[in-house]
Image (cartoon, rainbow, N blue to C red; front, side):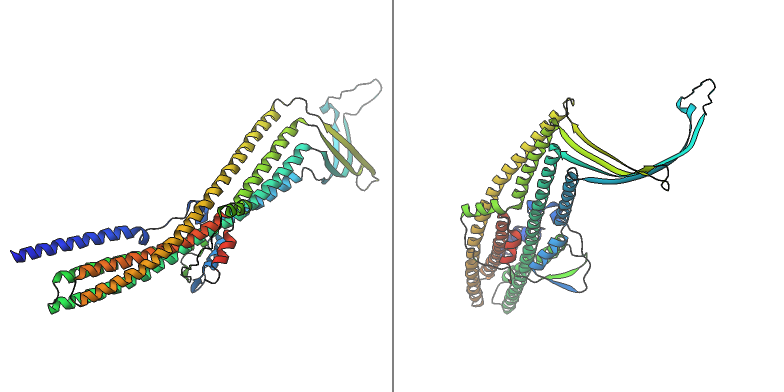
Length: 480
């Protein structure tokens, strides 16, 4: 009966350890084995890129290198750059309506005409009128110039296009900030995953040493077999976490390569380690002031409002008269090789709209709606900036505190593990206490890695919220 009871206790204890290991693995799973997605602002085109050429060998990739490649190859930055070019082209199209337009045209004609074809059937007594006239020839060559003297609609359309170009330029700068955010996120996640591999490997070594020691004591008869079984379960759990960590890191490297535009199959290594520098602090009022002045997306929204205002003025100008000037000068005659004469024409045209069937009213209503939408978007973005800045400051403050606590927790967990191992070697306790201490150490290291990553990413997010991501990240991670 005692033997059956001992076996039953061993089975129950083993099942409990397996359940605890499975629960720990499930809790650690998202940090080790899942693929982290980009933040919402940096998703979509910012998670894609145009691949660069394959480089022989293994690239040593710093964060600054990754950012530089992302700014050059990321799809979001490339598309936004082309939007600037398109806006520049549209501005020139609208400006051309106000600038002189000069053309030249030349034609020569040699004709023979059947008068009956045009309905001429003259008959006069004693006079013979030929049925066919010709052949005869003439030519004309002229230079033509047209110039808008006053067109309020064209003037305001040109101003609106100029503001749209400014909006596109600000949007491009904002796109570069989002690229920095996306690259920083994926790179920092990558080095966090790499740190988890190092931690998992150390934990496997510790678990292996405990298992070896427990096995030796079981063989020596100084410990029960359940101690070796517990140590073996702990070892298998740590090995499983190491596999998950390696897989997560490999997948994260693929994400990094995709964001910064590395060629498919390009080998590279992340050379940075997670930096840490205490945050100096910043008042909310100061941060908001800097954000409203620096956020490129907000400047783009304000430019859109100004463009919509000019578009409305252009719509109203449909009721106003316009004045245009045109002139031409050239030579005309029978054939180019025969004496030709100078000819010219100068004309001023005043166009006064009288009735246009409600088209101008429709243009004004449409322009009003677009102006209201632009102003609503700008106000919404201003409120969003306030939320972004406050959230980023809170996240930085929280992450700083978490880093400090997790650093202290690692020291305490290491001390607890050392004491548990000493007690086990002295035969005072069994492997349960040691396994629990190992799990506490693993949890402390995971918390530290996560808090360090959260701290660095919170600082990148704050730089983005302030509209200074490109400059701020480069300054913060310089030489780290």
